[in-house]
Each structure stands twice: as structure tokens, then as C-alpha cells.
Length: 224
Image (tube, rainbow, N blue to C red; front, side, top):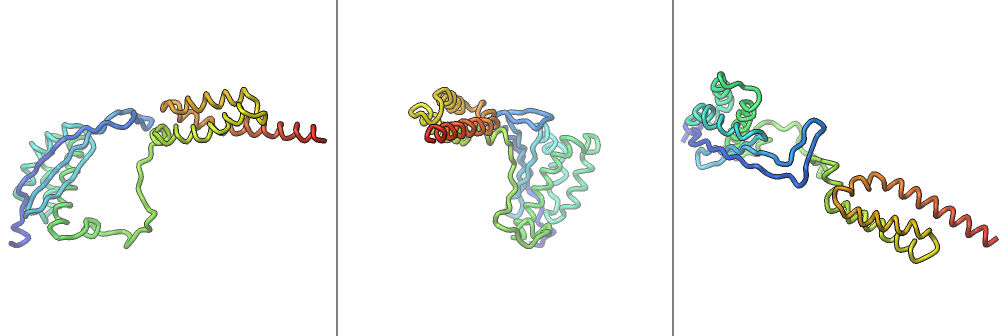
């Protein structure tokens, strides 16, 4: 079978709503779930997938407007498929959900073509760099979520608990500092407060350092 004869046999789409671990925000909008629209294309015994993050309405556009433009078309004519999809969106609108739906199908077409050619997708598209150092990574970072996870409360408890014990069981630090530190350690286990306590932690270190310095000066004076 020649390349021209390998056509898209089917276009399937599914919608998944995935709750986030905690409420997220970026300063312009807040959300507690992410909607994923997954497109699957089959041709020549291979499966290509593409996706977009958007409203479930994207799936309807894939089924009603984009599927007829792609099914039966050569897998290797991705540019032609893209132009056909743009035309199919004429009365729907290419921006917004129309563009998101087109993007998902376009990604699936490139993935399918790469699989049929048995090539990594970055080789098919053309790589900017021949290689990347192993420490290179792309990470989505949400500071609030990372600091209010399980690691933050445990870290606070580990950092604060020894100071509380020393202050309560010896005369090195005032007992009131021991009780305050113990309360902070307990509050740190309450997830929404751990981020705030992390921000205030340098203040606690400063206060403790001043008290330790004053105790050292007092001890030196009494020795003299």
C-alpha cells in the first residue's frame, strides 16, 4: 500500500473532567477541575492521539465539523487536512472552541503520521536541538499547591518541634517560645495554613536567633 492510500479511517473524541488536588488560580481565574478533550485517529493499523484543554463543546465541533473534513483523507497530507478543517469552521468560528478543537485534531494527525513513519514526532517536525541535558525539564509549578501539599506540613513540624521541646524542657529558651512554637507546629499540619506559616518562618528564625543571642550574652555575663 502506497502512502497516498493510507487514509484516516476513524475520528473519535472523548471528554474527561479531572479534579485538581486543590483549588488553583493564576491571578485572572480560579478553577477546581480541568477538562481534557482527547481526539483519537486510526489509520493503517496505527493510532494517533491529540488533545486540548477546553470546554466539552470542543468535542461536538470535532464530531460535527472536523470529522467529515478529515476522515478518508491521506494521513500524510497534514497541511491539506488542516486547510480543510479551517474551511469547515467557516460558519462556526475558528477562534475559541473552534481553534481548540482544530488544534486537538491537528496534533492527532501529526502523531499518527509519525507513528506510521516509525519516527519520533520531534524528528518528523524538525528538532531545534540535537539533544538536551538530562536535568532539563518542563514543569508546571503552582507555588500555593506545592507548599500546601503533604511536604510542607511535615517540613514545618520537623523544623519547629525540636525547638519547642528544647524551650519547654530547658532554660536555654523562654518557655513561652516553646508553647508558641508547639502551636505553630500543630497549625502547620493544617494544610491551608502551612503556606502562610512558610512565609512567616523567617520571622520565627529571626526571633529565635535573637533570643538565643541574648541568652548567650546573659550566660557570658554571669560567668564573668
